[in-house]
Figure: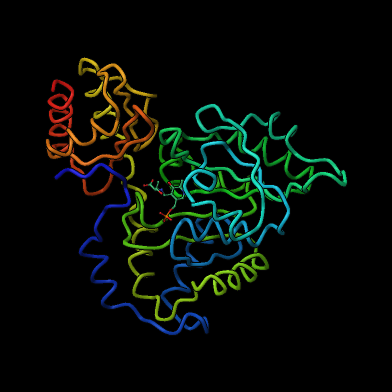
Length: 341
Ligand code: TLP
């Protein structure tokens, strides 16, 4: 099976498995796990923030950020198809007690003017705008890169209104690789950032939330409240360190494979792209085949390729570390067979 459902499906490398076995560990709730410490310090350094916190998942990192930044009754400004709004089971309202105000973006990028006009003024009837969330790359926009300029503009509006900015950077290193810039170019326009180790970077588990030391101290308490205080977590931080320091330099290969896949899909009669891929996500539209994405995904599975639906007629393909160029060619042939049925 060629698994293109997500870059979350990668298996840890031999080096990661050895690092897990050999990891020095301690009780991280007492801050005594040297491997977790090293991972957090390395991440803070790479992201240009004072401190970082190792969390179980991207969702947990985002939720802890919202919980730490906001008070119940506040309003969160975020893009209409952002992961925090679309895919986190309503957690911001269930846990942080905030309401969401969404802004439809252009390929995931919110218009700074729309952000400015959505910020609440002082009025007894209104909730306060507690936080602005950005996402880069933007998953539902097909892995689109939000430009450094767009982030800078939104950040300066947020600053002028004393509102913090959180970045869901689950695939931030893919954005940096595509834009050819250091991740700090993006993170400089944020107060906090969450990055995933278990997506394109190939670690088996974990994310990091980074920000000021004071923020991370409060975030650590929220992590504990959510049951995320882990003990000898060095065994999972060790592969994370390898992911963070060694795997980001190969993300260009996934981007190349996504481009090859997209060109292959475009050449198949009846198939078209929902948008041109910018990173490792390709979204195809099967509307012209007169079938739903569910049916197409089923047909494709029977042809040996696993993907996921991304709307009524959209199908998402994600390239990653465990997918070779050869498998991309095989996938294109399988897609052509599924389209012909
Ligand atoms: N996204 C997953 C699914 O939840 C859709 C995927 O396969 O793409 N932010 C963004 C932008 C994400 O894409 C994801 C995962 C997360 C946060 C959450 O990360 P995890 O799965 O570690 O909680």
